[in-house]
Image 1 (cartoon, one colour):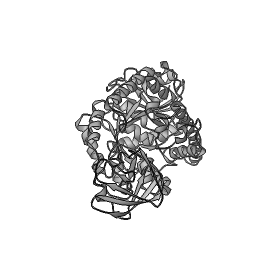
Image 2: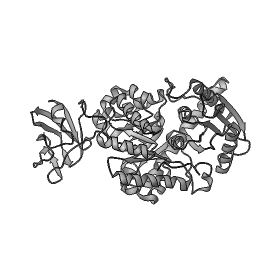
Image 3: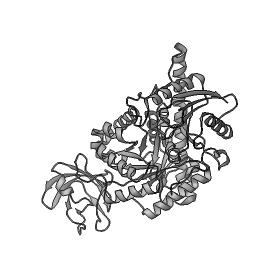
Length: 510
């Protein structure tokens, strides 16, 4: 079900109770705790912008039903909602352990053996038969999300002997990480191909590739989607050491990047995780690519009704570093109170943004007081160093100039007419204090703009000219309470909507 844009954006004021705008976008994973139309609507009303469908769990048939429900809820509430299909990727897992689990005792030996089954609790099989051939003596093997640590002490033709360095309980089907080991496993399994084709056929807005190691793998998925007539944006999940080594080339070709801290925090030294996160976000800013920070952001709220102080600080720091979106995983998929955790994420984002933008306003006031050539560009984030693919140089220059104008005139809205969404991304990366509205007549672009920091997507009639765009956004803004008579709007568009570079910036008074 590809969805329509029949009532999205303009009639938002007539829909169910709206959520106050928050610039940082919220991605939420659906699961048993948030299933069904009622559960989806609860999260939308709580503030979710994009839903993640985790293809590692559930059947294709179930995901098809869920995606259709998301589209239905989106129509009913009158607000575009994005859908991210997350491919499982070549995740290595343990096979079945006799009895379902085993206690790994520090100092004891364990074995990895060939085959599909094991009859001994200290002999493990995995979903990756080549593991025995590709590890070497001295390599580390991490189990159960890194809580159990082994080191390879001997390798034979049909088994690998390991010593337990850090003990704990291991269960059947849990993940296996091999930090620093270069594996020959393919970037996409047969199931991943099937799921990517399904995502294309169902009109998914984003498709994420897990365990990315090189730009070639990202381009492979992009080509697959293109040949299936899909406009889905490809999300590169950074969760391996090899991805860090090839970071710039991966970010260059990806449409969106995810800091997937779960596996990344096991694949690299966990002590380096905070600075690696900042590095990834910084490079995304340089390449003008949206970036999602994911995993354990409010993890304690799976069961607790309040987050820890460390978690609230973690979310705030991700926003201050330049994250476009924060993602919830188990918190909304299997947690006790999914809507409460979404609302908490919104509260943290609102508080952080308010103080961030106030600091920005004070900086600009000081700057503009010294010179009328002040800037509305990024004072706290690095200036983009690379032109985003699909972004015309004229458009980039016009967006930068219009951002300065909007700041100096204290405009109420910065409006971008964007056919593909790249102009909206260029504006989003300015982190401007003036709220941004992204206008489009394309239903896919409308939903994709739900992921871009600070951008409110609004649908416009197909083929609208500049005057029609202005009338449309004024009607929407007045009805929605975002505009009042006398407010100023800065509009960036092209002569010939959507064609070539955006070569016009206009100031309009409501």
